[in-house]
Length: 338
View (cartoon, rainbow, N blue to C red):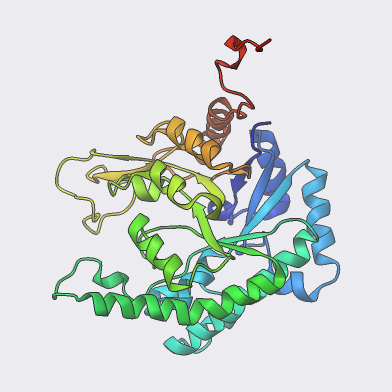
């Protein structure tokens, strides 16, 4: 059967889940990927309030919605990052604390561990995935000037391994997978850095990826090859489109310190089907590696009303997705030997 189509609620966190859930169903989705911000999924409540998990499922069930993953991008970003004033706006107050960098990183790491425990409490005995970011201590050096040595970058991967291996061990104890969304600003932002990240944590069984082609395509990364490279480490999938080669020629791939939606930009996120990602290649690759999980729409398009866009997006995904065949197309031509 085709995979369930869900909506990532991160870009809808201004709406309480009680208002968003019926809208999600009305737009045609099978379920949600719950963000750990807004009121969509409260990690502390899931751990400490015995009624919270049941009430959350009751709300989803009321509207005929499923859930396969929760997402902790914002807190995860702080685990390895060089902390500055920007992080205060995305972090819970108890993680930000006094804002001193190392304390923020340690509190973020503990919150991610708590998120694994909360996910297990929420999903019961079903498979559980936490999607998110890792942050990076070396992202600022992505362009290697002043001249940057491999030793400098390797120190960044060692820092990632030091901070995330205990987190991944906690995920393993909770029997939850962590899915890094490969993305600029993270320890892994393309295929090569993703391979290096896997090696850094010694191929930890709980470390995998929340695949999103929109963060790879405009860089020139072969986004279908990424799927085939990592196969069973693809724990979750974001369906998000992007276009590139647009704009007026004054802003390049680094963004020119412009905002999303600025007409000068070389690239920008688009509603599904309106960008340049070849999603037929994505679906074929997902089928080839045996991915059977949800296709989660992360809807972003500064040029479009989000309800209109998210509604057309679910239709686009349903038309695109298809079940795999159990036999070769030419099997019917074969004759049984007598």
